[in-house]
Each structure stands twice: as structure tokens, then as C-alpha cells.
Image (cartoon, rainbow, N blue to C red; front, top):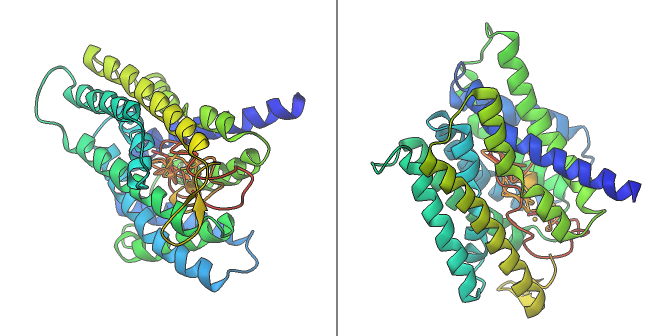
Amino acid sequence: MLASRRTDIVLLLVAVVWGSSYLAAKTATGSTPVLTVLFLRYGISAVALLLFVRSVSRRELKVGGLLGLSQAAVLVLETYGVTHTSAANAGLIISLTLVLTPLMDRRRMPPRFFLAAGVCIVAVGLLMSGNGLHAPGIGDLLMLAAAVVRAAHVALVGRLATDLRPLQVTTVQTVIGTALFAVPGADHLPMDAGVATWLQLIYLALFCSVFAFLAQTWAVQRTSASRASLLLGTEPVWAVAIGILLAGERLTVPAAIGAVLMLTGTTWGQSIERTHRMRSGPVVVDDGVPSGGGDALRGAGAGASGPQRGGARPDLGAVPQAALRPAGAGGPTGADGGAGRCAVGYGGSASYGEQHADPRTSAAPDPG
């Protein structure tokens, strides 16, 4: 019982950290350019993860490199998006990944799943409307695009990285991300920035990415996929709570209704997907690798996938399938972009997933 509670606390802490990544990223980008924030986040994470890696196979390099590109795309959209919208909206909209991932994974879903997806679409409309009907803001649109790209990233992780070591794949992703953002980001290093800015950057890299990934990987090996998904799926709730309590954000009546509908729709859709997958049994995908039947964001993306994700997460890397998140500009992804959530990324919705198999597998799934 004590061990079970400890595991639950760790998973809940990961969800809280991922949920906080949106506000942390929003605050950091207030004084530092977005691309510089991403460069430092990836770079610090890469250095930390390299301390744990002794060897990387050729296939881990190849797959990690490809996933590193897709995760970088997620984090760019999430981080730019959160700078133009509230942390609460960012955390809620990115959770749309939960219902988009099964569709991106080309799985046949029961009609009820599409009803749940419809609820989420209505929720996004209400969240974007603010005080009334008007053209959606650029920040909300970027977060919506990030949710779509993150879902594709998580589905890609599920197809390519299920038999690879998550820590190695995540580390490759962070190195790729560091290289991608080195040129545009290194020219604007915040050398004269205050202590608060550097603490935010370190928090994004070491806590929202590295800690969240390692803690999630440890925890999902000691609990059921359903329980891990439930706890990691609270990420959007924490994103809203932290945005309101620490940043003084306010939800209008339409936005509050949208928040309730989004949480309802994603939870319902995830439950339908999980039940459908368990009943349908193993499925053989195009490359001959069986998936389904069992249980990722992250989520950071690269290592975050899983939970990303489960959630996805955005969460940077590959994580046990049961917890593909879900970043995460978050993730791994939150603004983590859901280093799902991947190691660097998904600060984003942590339970993208339970994408494929047992949470005790060592393969990957985000994150804001």
C-alpha cells in the first residue's frame, strides 16, 4: 500500500510539474527570445541526460533524430503559442492531443469516441472565444496546431520507438533539439538576465524535462496503465490552477464552460479508446510490429512521449507506452512543450495516451 501511494504521488507530481511548465515558459519568454529559451532548455536537458547514457545504438540514433525533428516542431509551436495566450488556455487546448492521437495512429474507433472528440472541439471554440465570439487569437491557434503536430509525433513514436530504450532515444532528441536551436538561439543568450530568469530556464530543463521523464519512467513501471493515465491526465487541471493562482489569470464564463467540456471530453475519449483497445486485442501495424491490446506524452517529446504521455505530453522523448503524454508546451511535453510528454518537451498533456502496450515495456510514447 505504501509503495503504491508513493508511486501515485510521483505520477501526480509529474502532472503538476508538467502543468506548471506552461506558466514557466510564458514567464521565461517574457524576458528571453523564444528560440533562446528552447536552445537553453534543450541544451541543459541534453547535458543532464548524457550523464545517464553509456551507449546508443545506430537505430536509436536514427529514430531519435527523426523524432527530435518532430518534437522540435511541437515545442516551437507550443512555446510561441503560450507567449500569446494564457497558461490556462495553453494547457487545456494542448490536451486535445488525447483525442487526436488515436486518429493519427489510424485506429478504427467506435462512434462514441467521435462524440467525445466533438465535445473537445466545442470546448476549444469556447476557450478561444474569451468574452464572446470573435476571431481566435494567434496564441490559441498556435496551441491548436501544436496539439495536432504533437498527436502526430506521439503516433510516430508509437510506431518507431516501441522496442527502443526510452532514455537513449530521449537523449538523442535533446541533442538534436540543441543543435537545431543553437544558431538562432545562441546569439541572444540572457547573460545579463536576473536570477529569476535563469531559475525559470533551469526549472524548465531539469524539472519539466529531465526529472519528469525519469520520474514518469520509474513510476509507470510500478503501476497499471489506467492508473498512470488517470494521474498524468490531471495535467490540464494543474495548468489552469497554477495559471489562476500564480499568474492571476481569469477564466470568463464561456472559457470556464470550455475548460469543463475539454476535461470531460478528453477523459471520456481516453476511456473509450482504452476500452476499445483492450477489447480488440493486438493489432499488427504496417511494419509488422504488434500494437494495441495493451498499453505512452508522455510526454518531453523526445523522451517524453508518453505519457506522454501517455500525455504528448510535449512533453522530448520516448517513454513507456502507458504514459504517453502529452508535453507539454510542456512535456516530457509542456511548454514542455509535452516534452509529452518527452523529456524536453511535453509539458503537454500527459496522458496522450496509453498508446500501445504495457507500461512495463521500455519503449517510447509530452506536456505544455
